[in-house]
Length: 109
Length: 111
Image: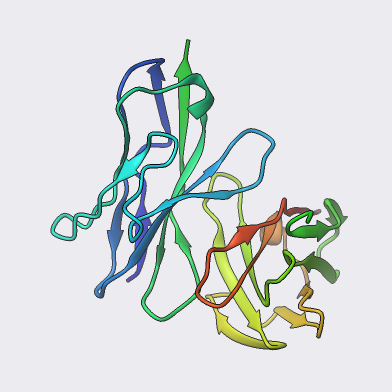
């Protein structure tokens, strides 16, 4: 079955602390993986994708095929990082996105 | 460019009724995907339209149907509404295999 699991509903940290939002996936082929973010009162938007291997707003994510994980990391959290984060998988040769249930990140001052 | 727009913003219906939701894609995009997001859940893929045809479909019953117009805008229709259809309905536009840009959503409440 194709599935994305985000085990934490809520992650609370203080400003300046490291952050890791966990994402595990179930897929038999080679997936494309994404992180989407939704800030308060804004629409869902793409944060980063594994194929670009870039850092956006200080966030990085590495695809670990052995552990079937795509965790999102940031070394020093900022208050403006507070948002809902969704991990998503796109199966090969399709356009549909399969989302996890999301993790709410709260960064306290 | 206003990006992806959806109408209406909110909608209240009763069980058994039918509803139509509308989506205008981002300028230059030709593909529209629809997602249902229940409370506390991630978005779930309903279907995708490209060149006025349904190209892919998720695990949703035939009560959910759609249409794409020549100007690439799209409608989502849901017949015989159930209480469980209450959700936020998201539209996303893209070019084929490109980044999906999401609209603000339509909040449907079924009483």
